[in-house]
Length: 85
Image (cartoon, rainbow, N blue to C red; front, side, top):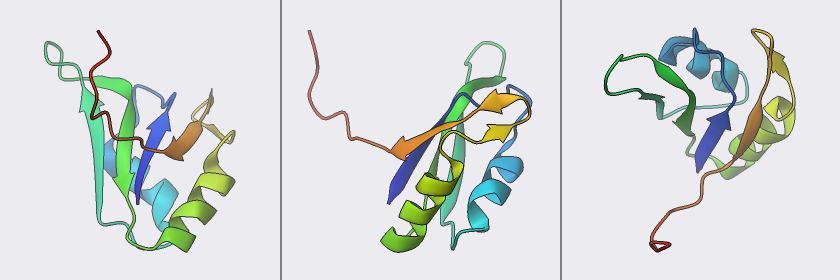
């Protein structure tokens, strides 16, 4: 299951993000979205967890939690297959 983590501290790196989620189960991958010009975090990222139950447990536990002074928003990532023009 692909999970979107929003409102991350700009100082959060991929290893820190992975540590948040690995407490709830296996993490296949963890990717922060970076600003192309500065190379710094844009404050959100994606986590892939293969087990749906573990992923749901992570979402439930982490959504609304305080990490590095920020209140996280965590949800299932929705595929953006259709363009909104």
